[in-house]
Length: 130
Length: 130
Image (cartoon, rainbow over all chains, first blue to last red; front, side, top):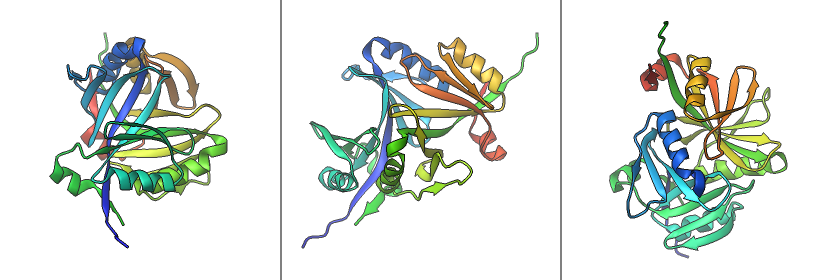
């Protein structure tokens, strides 16, 4: 039996907004939370509000769906973390590039993604799972 | 003309969950995020996960509605902060005790509440609005 620990950390809170209202929502949340907004031209569906919440990346994402939020969990082992969350009762929704989207008991979405933070910051703030 | 500054801070992220699944959701999020869960017997609709997100109170709330999230903004002037957010494009949803519930452009909910944090912590981390 091979035992390998993996680590996780909540990386981002995403304010998923219907496309027609996404620009207005991004302006609102930027002003409401007092956080400058930044759009990456390569990924225009994301408006990042870097300083809106402490220690977390806050993003307004344009989606083809009803208004919702979701949380991104970054991890050094996407497969192991996905398996852990499925064992806790989550169900699989989709698998896009390296991101696994799950639905939690109760109906909320969460995504498991590779580590996006600076590796030292991740190591200092991550949970370790056996 | 009377000018009075007020201060705000994001206090809490609430994972609002349909009542029938709220207990299961609270167990899931507690285990998923590695945070102990605490229920206040006086307010059994709330399961608090104190250490789930840095600097924020995370709560699974049982609601009579579809799954959603909302954010609580704490402030030393609920009236002024509500007026500021309405001017930014939010709309009023309800007014319950000292909590004002608003809907942001894009459809998400947020609540304006009196200061819940320790006053020194609030002062150190709040935004000041003119």
